[in-house]
Length: 444
Ligand SMILES: Cc1ncc(COP(=O)(O)O)c(C=O)c1O
Image (cartoon, rainbow, N blue to C red; front, side, top):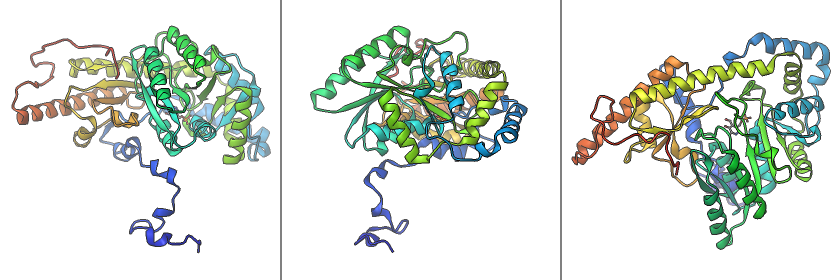
């Protein structure tokens, strides 16, 4: 029996240890995304919710071949604990992957982690004290927000437009935070094919934002899972390619290979790298030797660049299916049109609430992620994240058609109850007044 004083009596019917948890766990509520996975996995529901890569586009025999060779040639090493920094050969290969995004780095500065999610967790653990402030785009990646909250930090969302984070807004947010004595620890940013907004930070803004952060002594955490998954043209080079000392860069094999391996990495300036290795060792001893060696083998023997091209083709087709369907079924709404990645960010008509509308959408057999999931402050009710990565183009068309039915139904309902006649159906055959703002000029 644990000696915890009066704790058992401070529990509740569901959990006798309720009051024993650390205060920081108060932030650990199931995210909207997580709750959705359960519902959306029913086969009759078209899920435009999750960000699951389409791993079926990866030929199984490539993976089986790599696994087979690893077990035959390096079995005892693959099944053993390894280095807390990661397999040296894989770290070399990771520098080749990053070179595709303009980054020149030494394998010594790479730390392999259990997905980039774990790199985010380790980074937060190193830098965040309760009450610290993290600057992040508004909206931002839901599970990063969960991590920052779990370290009792606050997130201040800086607005974006179709060119990504707005530099003047960043300056203003830094000044306002400093004016009230807040301690800004870092800027968390997803500059390329943003999750959830789908937009990409322009080259000029990359330079300007790095300059602002340098001037203000703010570290940049660049999270880049999607940069290699572009459709028509390459995105600007990674921010880390511009600034080696002020940027910690996160990468992953989850989207360019498969998330099931759980292999990602951080690239960090020397001192931070040392601390990250120690934190990695404390958390997991060493990342999985087996999956690291399989990926290393795959990178040595397979046409991995060609495989990334295949993924690009698959996602491009799905993105086009989604944009075509939105134009057909929801022509008066606005949305982002990404040049890569997995996500479209849709803006609903005023007065509609994406979270409140979700149960009705699921009844109509379509799921999405409400915009509120991507803000730490409750914003985002007028937005929806639509993922085009996993469903087939045909399912995407069906899903968007169902979504249009839901949105039109909600508008009709509002119209009926409001009785103002101001809200009208947005069905394409309905009278259209006003013009579509496509893409939206502002994601605030
Ligand atoms: C922006 C962003 N960062 C990090 C991750 C985590 O990826 P993983 O842990 O699979 O590398 C994801 C996954 O969707 C993501 O979208």
